[in-house]
Amino acid sequence: MQDEDLAIGIDLGGTNTDFGIVDRSGKVLWRGGIKTKNHPEISSYLDELFLAMLPIIEHAGGVSRIKGIGVGAPNGNFYKGTIEHAPNLAWKGVIPMAQMMQDKFSLDVTLTNDANAAAIGEMVYGAAREMRDFILITLGTGVGSGIVANGSLIYGHDGFAGELGHTMIIPDGRYHPGTGLYGSLEMYASATGLTKTAIEMLQKKSDGTSLLNTYSTEELNSKIVYECAVKGDVLSKEVYSYTGKLLGMALANFAMATSPEAIILFGGLCKAGDMLFDPVRDSFEKHLLPLFRNKIKIIPSQLPDDDAAILGASSLVWDRHRQ
Image (cartoon, rainbow, N blue to C red; front, side, top):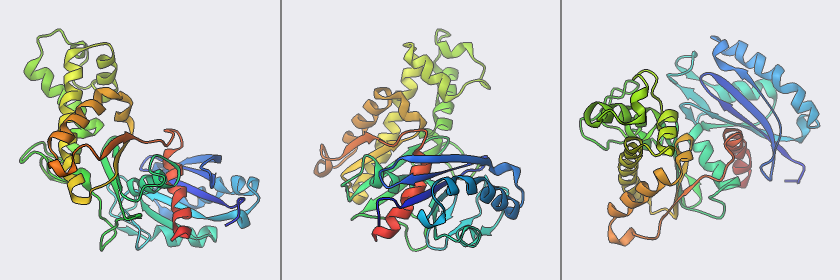
């Protein structure tokens, strides 16, 4: 590959689709976006996406400079290039998205789920450069994950390996409305889960002095909990302690399965810094066999927040040509 080769990264979300043209160093040269939710039909979505991307492709020097397109999408199947039964998209069933994009753009298209794309992005551009064994955990509205072993991302036999956010950590725990399961990690270590913890603690433990009491249950969210914790609110800090304890325990289970060099945490909750990372690391070490202790790093992502999803998707192109 020549230095001037470029890749397109597309972050296909339920509300918005963001895209950009990226060079091999990880610099996003041009970017744009459209509203996914405005398109109940896949054909009109692809038409608008093509028209929106055409100007930046021309600015980049035309299709001949583009090595391929990488797509991070909900319920994306790497093997088949399909989006399968994504609950947050209007297009139901199995969508052959990679083939449809390939036909539209006349470029090779590689597609996977968004967390897997983030893991490849971390390996190509971020904290996992030079690593062959690591786990990436995304802590946002939900909990996603990508597992890399021996230098390759683990997809499993059907393309859907790595759903660590849906593993059970509390038997008969909180109900997950999206899956129908009880007690999964996502219901405790996501932004949604952290908010639920704050509400439960307010109901059980609050003496009325917490800053969180100034908000109604409907108003409370993870951002407010973070802001109150930064101001020194004891109960808000306890929310992070509890969240970190459960996340650390879950990460210990994951680590003993694959023995990674590092676990990389990515997403909005990581902005809490040591308030989250300290209890995570403490709990992690406590729940490991002695054989694994003090040799697996837990570190934040090095991908810039604003570009992370686009970088993750674009890295699929370089990873495909590396193999």
